[in-house]
Length: 133
Image (cartoon, rainbow, N blue to C red; front, side, top):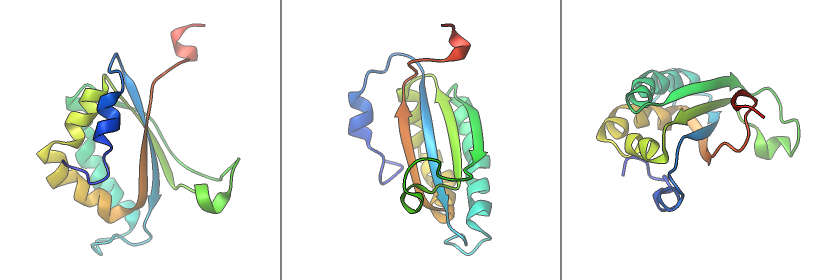
């Protein structure tokens, strides 16, 4: 398995009928764990390697941005630096990428070096203003 905290049993237990959006909540390290620049520098290296893997599986980044403030909740418990929404055609496509040797050997080390915490929430669309009423 490519990622030590991948909840594979939970993901495989969900229905895989259509697209899924992965909500990435990222808390960066001030300094990359390997000493190669900042946490942001390491995360940019991770992103550059991961994007082709996402696209190869029919996925796309639909939104990415800097988290500015905790608007509701306890700031010290819910503070994130960066948020990314990645849409995959299926959960299986996401699992395929995350469990690939390419991800494990090339991208994941940069993710680990750059992030103090990284949570990915699998979300199925229940409403979108872009898909009608």
